[in-house]
Length: 83
Image (cartoon, rainbow, N blue to C red; front, side):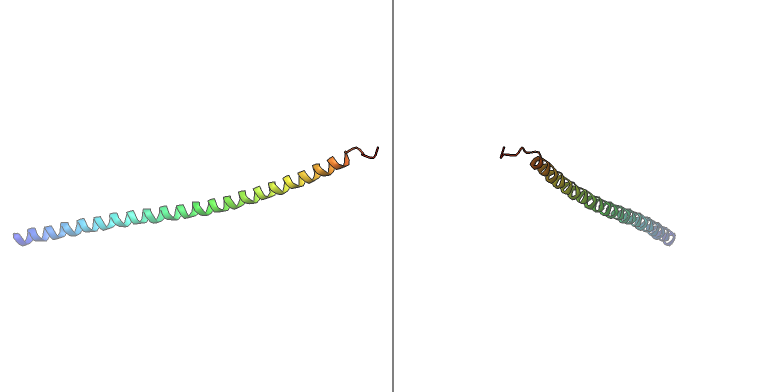
């Protein structure tokens, strides 16, 4: 009788341990998947940052070009000072 009860205890213990390990494996899988998602989002954010930096640089170039055009127009529209 004691041997049967001992066997049941071992069986229940092994069963509980398998469930515990399975829970830990599922938890680790969720962590790995969350990390993959964060790495993908980080990569996307880096690409977006690079795109924005290029756009800002292009806007800076456009502003410089407009300034140059306006200065040239201002010089062409100045009245002659000799008169």
